[in-house]
Image (cartoon, rainbow, N blue to C red):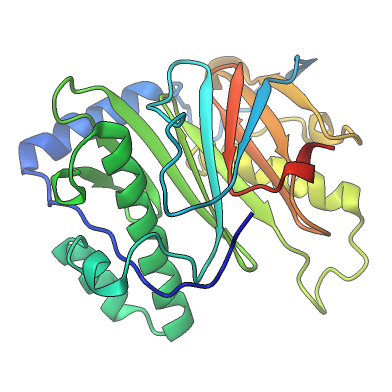
Length: 276
């Protein structure tokens, strides 16, 4: 797998019309379980069969096998913050006016570059999935790196979650609501945190992300399974959520939560030994 730090890139999108934004927002809201703030959720845990995993190296050549995810399918991209699929000048022409403004307002240069890299790669991925140019991609952006895109021809939608962890950017794509989490030990803060604790925190954060940080009470003991695992959590009126631990390097832990059971996961940017 090549993760060379090529600083070339960019990505971009067309700002959607107001009517389109409202339709997208309705679609996104419909994909989430009904939430009742501050209600305690009965938690029922069940171990599930792990989905089939397919690995692809990260390359500037888009993998032919990577298509728009269907129900039960999840696509995950992992790349270093400095990796970009195209030259910087080209990528900058893809960014929307609002994205350029957000990047400009970032107080930290490193965070600004990270934001631009993530958005460039998202535009590049979605353009290939939808068979259109990056400029034709329309995104609904909630301002916190949770996006939704609709196919320009058939109107089918995909949910996109972007998460940052250490040197990594991870992008999750599915047809259902999802939350991705990457947990990196913080020097000086969690030196004594065990791998089990980090794994549990990754699961917790992915579920909170999928629930859009709704104030849902659930049994945190349900997240304590020691071994990497795939399982379902029934949160009663908050819906059933499916959690999957993701392979990462060293002390980094990651997890994803989805509103539908997973049958296939496509990992782009993970080494072949990741599943050994």
